[in-house]
Image (cartoon, each protein chain N blue to C red):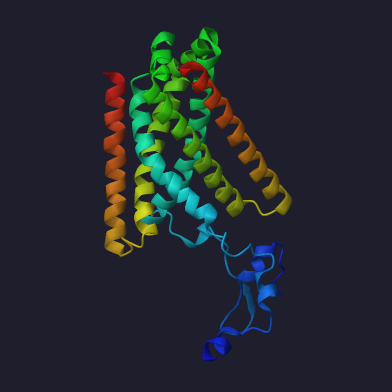
Amino acid sequence: MVRIKDAREAAMLGRRSDGTLTRRPLSPHLQVYDMLQMTSLLSILHRISGVVWCGGLVLLSWWLIAAGSGQGAFAAAQWFFGSFMGWVALFGLTIAAWYHTCAGIRHLFWDAGRGFAMEDAYRSGRMVVIGTAALSVITFLLILI
Amino acid sequence: MAEDSASIRSLRSPLGRVRGMGSAKGGTHHWWMQRVTSIALLPLSIWLIFSLSRLIGAEYAVALQWLGNTFNAVLLLAFLAAAFHHTAAGLQVVIEDYIRSDLQRFALICAVNGLAILLWLATTLSVLRITL
């Protein structure tokens, strides 16, 4: 007998071919995937980069609120962004931001019902990786110039 | 009539099946708004990332001048509105996927949305303060 601990699982009960009850996996059932496949790896990276963007939004908020508060608060924020930790954070955030943007475009095509064939999915996946690298390098160059 | 008999395959009433599963009509709103805000964020975030990359380590006066520009301020306000909506919506989906306890899930979603609204108000006020 399968015990249900979560109300959502009521819709996820199934029967095996021998008739016994089984619990189907709930999303995101990571255990089903081979995480080294490009399709699943890019999918989980899209979610991770989205969560990383939240940190970026908090830092952007700090910078904007500091700019509106006055010189002292702004200097403190600028000190952080100029520090080693600040550079590491901005480096990671740049890549995460561009990745989430490129992968987001890919998802919008999927939402429109396009690009589901396996070769298309792999091609768009490679385009996302190349696009992220190119846009990140352009951004780093803009910072350094 | 053939269609009617085909649609009634369960002994449960339509109300019984629907109850507790959210209302009809509004079910796609969250998903749809996430897509709409993502399309709005596409040009806005490209503009913002390239703009901010030129402002790293900027003097206070330079930053104020950039924020005080009406064009920049309007795009920034639009970005903040779309970004906080999109972020709160996205985080809500992540929470709904991983948090199993009803109470914890509800509390976390409330906290995320509340924090997003507070930060959106604070940043928007800050931009308006500088540009006005």
